[in-house]
Picture (tube, rainbow, N blue to C red):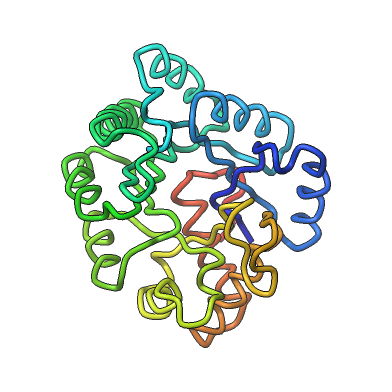
Length: 258
């Protein structure tokens, strides 16, 4: 199983990071993608990827931190992005729920990082909250030139998911699919399994039966089991197909099997 999106570099894991990686291995998680949300976390993601064979990294500036975007940040991210274990630009996008950065700053950082991804020939990891329509409109401008994209922790409905698929992008789902009657679970039930990646977004949004506790990569297995239940297929089949989708998306050729 692959955890396609987590934040193991966050301070929440400072005293338990090695333990969390070990527990992930024991649970059957063989690959983890650690996601950058600003320049410093992007640096830390690359450092984690260098330390652990099973970890890969992305680099980017989250909409919450878009106010930090400038030419120097862009230059440093470009340097980080050529590292052999950096597999995407992200997490980038728009968040009009919290508005931690002014919306014009969010749009600028989003545009510039989409441009960066096209130059680097890397896929993008997209965050959108209360801004799906505008996020999709912006992505449409770049989709023909991008090597792929994922709307992480997918916030939309089934129709929204198919709009994403029409662009050649995919979605990822996490612990929310284990919550009773969640929209994410309904989407995951109805859309093609081949269009889904699994994630934790650790340390956030732990699945049942750990809801309210700190999430970590081993818990992606619980979302996988729930997805198998929703699809009425075996866990092994879910693991096989979602792992294949994730390997293809991030071009994890060294771990690609079948």
